Image (cartoon, one colour):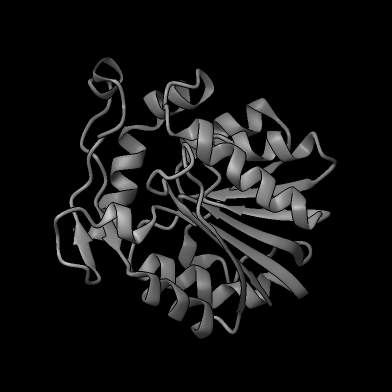
Length: 224
């Protein structure tokens, strides 16, 4: 089984504890990153959003409070079911490779990928589909681990890395099974993906826990 499929298998195995962790706010770093992606989106005031890799739908519920209409897609049935049950948007089970051919009813003002681009080929599928999913002038938001701070002691080159539940409390981490692998990209490689997707990068944000600390993530904003 290749690593892109290992990611899906891992999230299928960990759907239940993930829903609990998100809804009970048990992941410390999300206090920074959740607010960061919401602030980035509402600053641009899109009316409609496609949340790619929506998980259990927390972002749709958050954006709904600002009058933003959200459609979410995810490959994990349990997460999509939980999102639909909680409401706040319209949610569909959909693999990334089918984004370009799926019969969505309209194009969107914005496409959001919030820590949902973990793979290699699967990520490329999203960027290839972006221009077909967005209105002219539409925006793509991507939040991911900041390559510089996430690189650790390994070489600063693209490649697969083994996942972990590092950053979770010990008790919380014990409820999860095998962590998904993830595909590390340098800043330059992320920027190349936007170029390949015919998108123009217009803003880069680097959320931090406090002034002077290492960035916990990077948010790219690009225009179609």
